[in-house]
Image (cartoon, rainbow over all chains, first blue to last red; front, top):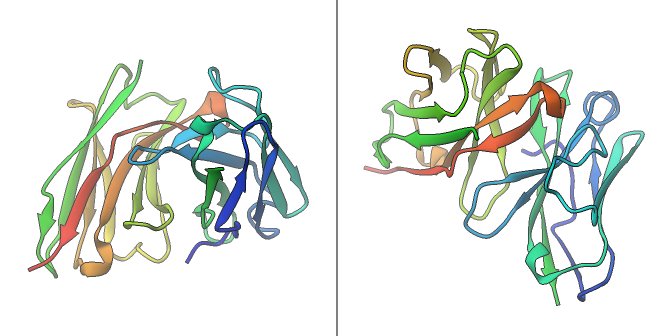
Length: 110
Length: 121
């Protein structure tokens, strides 16, 4: 029942750039900030990007976020083995009056 | 450093009420620059937002769960609580509590480690 749509998987070799998309609508991404969370295997999610493209302290600048219209993207440049994780986008939805998450994308480092 | 720790029964019978507590340390649950959320994740699936509480008692709930959910805070214990009534097997999941902070435009910057709740007779 996720409102935001992400590709189920993405992959790349070490050093490559990987991009993950997040598609929503005018009531969520189109009118509110987008957040990205990284979830390493067996752990709780970690805030990776807030306010569409801002990184919290401690998040490497290899991670970058962008937003255009009702879609958003997360890019990982210089892919590293420790980036192998699930990535979730999120946004507030004005129609639902609640937070919505994406379907999640599993990133594999080949 | 803010820390969150979920606690509660790991097994709940169908039709009963699931009750969880999240203990916050290193910060005040009464802070006006924060809100507190519950999120859950069924095994192998994505995250589902359950609801949040802010400004001492205002709440927003996921519309699909609203009729069964209550989120509250106990400021004297610096704790957040979740009650989910009439549970079924579909409510089996890892439950997380998390903080949303003003500095991160209300992104969820601190999370508990999560607690697995299984609904089964």
